[in-house]
Image (cartoon, rainbow, N blue to C red; front, side, top):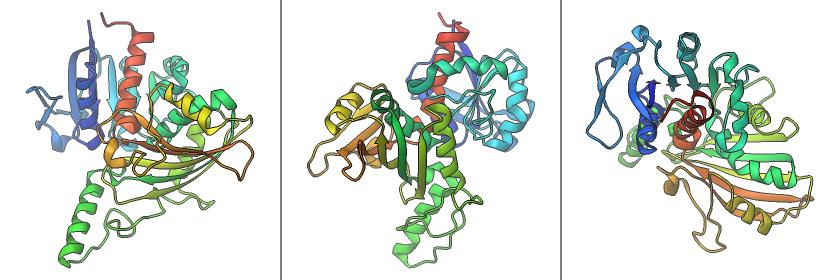
Length: 342
């Protein structure tokens, strides 16, 4: 016996990936519903690689009663209205927005890192999915923290435009084309030109000069992994369609060598190490697209601090950073708590 699962925001980038990942991982489904706003109602959307097509249902009229899980990928404004309604109807919500992440009554889960914390979902019947840049970071940090205890992390991100949505991907494509043919390249989605450029701003600025994305990485890492870890982030948007990269510098309490870290990470769940000291002996965003893993490369010791390491971390932000992590949470929920599947 399987589950009845609703995907809210099914027509967006992450929503489509949620449907793909559910199909690829053969999630035990009795029924799946594609749910979106009124403007998409009645549209047909693919489910996996089969010929099966789903008819998009109107979120405003959707009854969550009798559904086991709802995977939300429609943004904070939608989650604020409909996630509590779904949860109250007995449908467990796994929310991809930032709305509930720092709610003390809502667990923030990366299954490879803090799976035990999922038990707290019963307080509100809601589970939060972390920020895309945080998810891949903590997957790489967790095994190293267990081995040598992390004191401080300095991370610079190189984030793809798909993290902003389809309009941003279109903007990168159109600006790139316009530059080649000599047409104007006025920015609309981003504050500055993104094609052939980098923008050191992801989300809005806060009073202390950091951006909201940088703040998210700090507070979410503390909640998921360890509140004692000190972290500072500089988040940068780059002209890449899919795949986030991170240059990570870590200071540990205890001694750990690059070789030890390499071996630890090779055995870590969700991690693939590609680290050859030769041209091309590392992973780039283009190579990670469509994969489930968080890739770690360029593992080396930092001689400027005691017990320091530097890493290069790459992952598909639409997968591990969003859809895959949400489906992994659903799998964990079913396996450990709902226990309905045969």
